[in-house]
Amino acid sequence: MTTSAAHPTLSPMAHRFRGYLPVVVDVETGGFDWNRHALLEIAAVPIELDDAGRYVPGEVAHAHIAPAPGTEIDPKSLEVTGIKIGHPLRGEVSEREGLDAVFIPVRAAVKKHGCQRAILVGHNAHFDLNFLNAAVARVQHKRNPFHPFSVFDTVTMAALAYGQTVLARAAMAAGLGWDPQEAHSAVYDAMQTARLFCAIANAWPRPPAATEAMPESPSAASPDIRA
Image 1: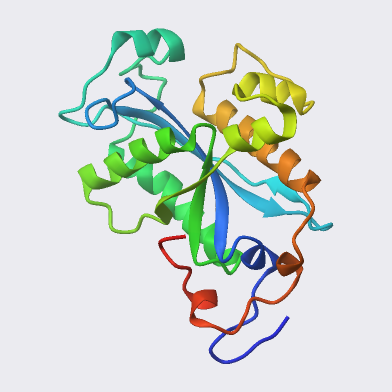
Image 2: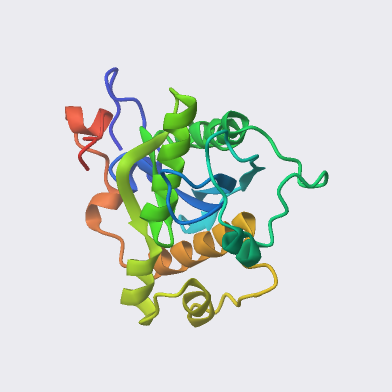
């Protein structure tokens, strides 16, 4: 590992994905249209490294979110998720507060690992990213730590590793188990997706570049937003 005044010592995680920190995100929503349906729940799990250098799920950050003004709810979506909007035990916060509940610990994890930005990991990841970006736009959040369009999708990873694309089936194929009573909770789905990502990534041969210092170049300090 090399160091310089311009390029401080980087942690191993900063090497592995070209300066991006994988963060698993799951959202529960009021429908499928991110332009009009409400964001109702969000959970995020930064990926960490254990002492052996293996990927492990980090600590989950989570928020129940009150429907933002102007957004809609499809009742059929609530039948699937079981979300009871406005229930006093739900602990709803505003959309801005919900984003901060996730963004603040994610930014801390990015800094901890010497990364430049978070990259969203999800099962059908663009669904989660589109709802996240729509909420960011509604509240005009200026400190979104996630790449605006690049993702790591565990649907593709699980299809390659296990021949499965459904999260529950992929989790069972990976030996992680699946509890249908807990499914469609953002926390449960995010943690299972994080475990799935780690299981596949840990089994994959690490490329030589992942164990070497990042090159002394502008791209090492500032990952290209075009990915």
